Image (cartoon, rainbow, N blue to C red; front, side, top):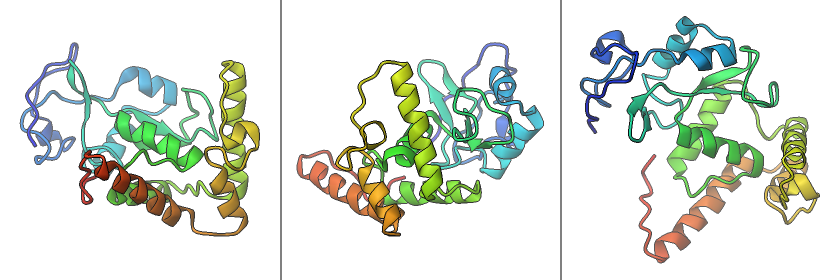
Length: 217
């Protein structure tokens, strides 16, 4: 797929392929995706490290491989993903930065880690997310980590006065994410169950005419 050339304010227009920032199969000529200054400050990382992440990921999102796209601007720098167990807020210490993700994958990954909800994503996407976390040294289904993530989520919902009925907020095993706590206790493979549940959901969605493609990422 080829994306149109765009100019982002205060960023010079160049062929990003020559910098090794964007793989040729994703785009032709696009703006130079310089590291986002505000994100670097919030996450306490250098532009050099940002570009190291970008090159290590082949110039795209660490899960889907695609660029970051924001309507109506066009191509924008990929957001920085960090471990919220280390730094629960938007900012991070820099040591817990895991990689660069597009907005879609970043949001979906958070739901997967918290509730095991892959949002009808394909098997390929779930496997890619698993590899991404593994390479970052993260096991979301380690019992203490899962419990700590739940406490952070519950405290945020209380602070924001949001009535959340998930397992973490109510302790109800029938709530969202409750099955993960059971699987962890029984030492059952959580990733395999996420794939099974998501494929069932996609099958039901296809029966309603939504036409999900099994091999899409």
